[in-house]
Amino acid sequence: MAKTKTTYTGENVTDFINSYVDNEQKKADSFRLIELMQEWSSAEPKMWGPTIIGFGNYHYKYASGHEGNAPVLGFSPRRAAFSLYVYSDTERSKLLLAELGKFKMGKACIYVKRLSDINITALQELSRESINYINEHHECSCRKKQTN
Image (cartoon, rainbow, N blue to C red; front, side, top):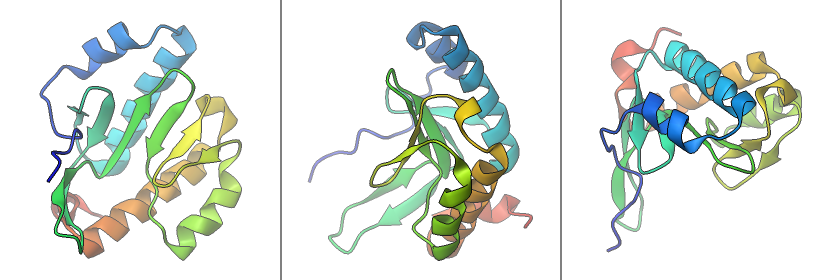
C-alpha cells in the first residue's frame, strides 16, 4: 500500500512561509490564516508534508483499509492559490459555501487567491463545522478541546 505524503514533519512553520512564499500579500495572508486557524482549532500550527500547515490531528480509516493521520484544519500557500483544508461534506457546509465569497472547490479543499476574496466569518463557520464532523466521526485531538 502506498505511503501517504501528508505526515507530520517537525519542520518550522515560520521558516517554511518565509522561504516558500515569495509574495508579500500571500505571506501576510499566511500568517493571518495561522492566527485564525490556531484560534479556531485550539491547536499549534505544524508542518504536514512539504507544504501543508496543519492544526490538530485525527486518525482516519477508509473501507478499503487505507488509514492514516491528518490535520483537523489546514492550508497550503500554493503559488496559484491557497488550498484550504477546512471542508467536510455536510449539508451545513454546503450552505456556508454560498456565503464564502470568491473561491474554487476541489474534491476535498477550497482554493482562494487571497483572504480579501472571502468572508472570514463564513470560513470560521466552515472550519467549526469540519471540526464538529471530524470530532463525531474520527478519533481526534479536537475531542479534548472542543468547546461548541
